Image 1 (cartoon, helix red, strand yellow):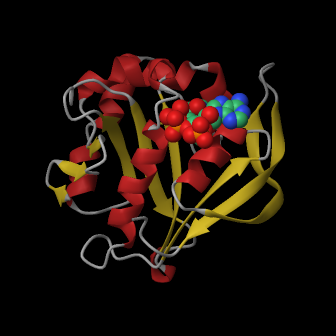
Image 2 (cartoon, helix red, strand yellow; image 1 turned 135 degrees about the vertical axis):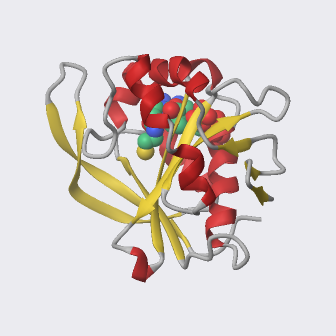
Length: 192
Ligand SMILES: CC(C)(COP(=O)(O)OP(=O)(O)OC[C@H]1O[C@@H](n2cnc3c(N)ncnc32)[C@H](O)[C@@H]1OP(=O)(O)O)[C@@H](O)C(=O)NCCC(=O)NCCS
């Protein structure tokens, strides 16, 4: 169910607009080595500090209220103030094609309990529902070196559609950037 407050997945996750209080834990996620490795610098910019991130979060509620592309915070219904992860969408090839690309990350202390899968299901349902965002297609790419993200996508009903070679620039642990082959997943039906 989607309201001004966000999306209640009905599956143990809420997706809500970001607030300044999310910045500390969000920055911890952005600095996590796995996140740094698999979130592309082409799309994810790491802010200098908590204040810079909090400033960036200020537009989150407005983006949600306009159903504009953006990022939502993943929380548990019983602790809606505790940032557990993020999930966002952007146009794949422009608004006319009504297709979105998704990305997600889960705070290191909240991994391994199905949060990414549940958040992906919740956002995808809303994006594809005729009475939600009403899109025609939702897709995501993950590095072929990131099997955890592949498990998440498959578990959320995103079929594997092929490999895009050299598609995504990603950061190696030594800081150098290398283009990875990615696995493309997509769905055109809201997950049950
Ligand atoms: C990938 C990520 C989002 C998963 O979040 P999560 O909430 O722990 O995910 P879930 O609990 O829903 O599922 C994780 C699945 O990956 C599996 N997994 C975890 N690490 C794995 C690994 N190294 N190899 C293979 N599978 C792995 C888990 O067993 C689980 O599969 P299962 O449900 O079939 O048992 C999280 O690890 C993360 O934020 N990583 C860094 C950022 C990132 O990679 N983002 C995605 C970019 S495409």
